[in-house]
Figure 1: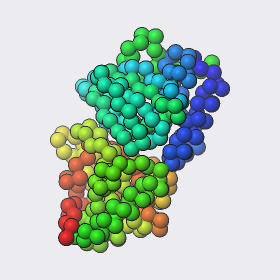
Figure 2: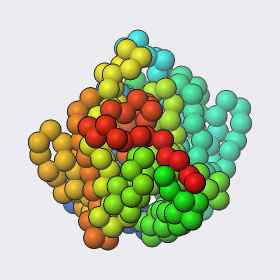
Figure 3: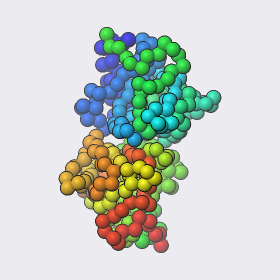
Figure 4: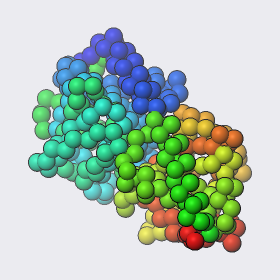
Amino acid sequence: MITREERRDAQAYAAEQLTAAGIVLTDAERGAIEVADFGLSRLREQGLMLLVYVNTDRYCAKELVLYPEQECPEHRHPPFDGTPGKEETFRCRRGLVTLRVAGKELVLRPGDQHTIPPDTLHSFGAGREGAVVTEFSSASRDDLDVFTDPSVRRETVVA
Amino acid sequence: MITREERRDAQAYAAEQLTAAGIVLTDAERGAIEVADFGLSRLREQGLMLLVYVNTDRYCAKELVLYPEQECPEHRHPPFDGTPGKEETFRCRRGLVTLRVAGKELVLRPGDQHTIPPDTLHSFGAGREGAVVTEFSSASRDDLDVFTDPSVRRETVVA
């Protein structure tokens, strides 16, 4: 659970970081930035801000924004609708992101990118200055994500 | 046909425009920028610079860079391998791009985006200050593109 104030602050932080990365947003997009606490109620430590540009039944593109040292909990994108599950490419735009996938740890800095195969456990976290990461992928179904920590809930409750 | 000098200049222009749009490139990417004249040998008027971030069998992401008033000739992305053909979303990052699709003309400025259905004729051109456009799409097969002008060749010969 997060408060309205936490959500407002997180949206403002994300918009500011995206702007600092040279990304121009519309007003509607600024208001549509999703703030996810994964049901853990410790947004600054475990969470993520997301802006979805497009998500058709074939492909998806998003910006992910992380607070300094904020972590996205380990999860995988399982098969659905006859597809092998979401395949995704992370491209770091600003700051630094550490990506843990299939037992390996990769540090991505601006201009670095890495593709995560479908249905493969991964987690990631930002460095001391936070991070902006563009995600290119096949169709996205966040509601189907499988998290290692059973206490994770993908939907965020705003109090 | 373009000269080596035209290619070098176009790559340098594209890298400069991408940097001005806040996009960080690796040295390898700078050298991999594709310069396309569509076989028309008038690069500054008819052509495009492209940087492919990723192109799997499921999705693709590219940056498109246009010289001031440069045009990409009308074409469509036909069905292939049992798919309906490439579906793509253009998002303007810098400058201005005029997109003509299905009899309509749309002007995209930074932050504006539009999705083009598969197998649908479209063309686009930059405004006076050129343009940087991010393209999110399903899998891309440029070699299959069907152009309205029969003199177009998708492969560019460098003399």
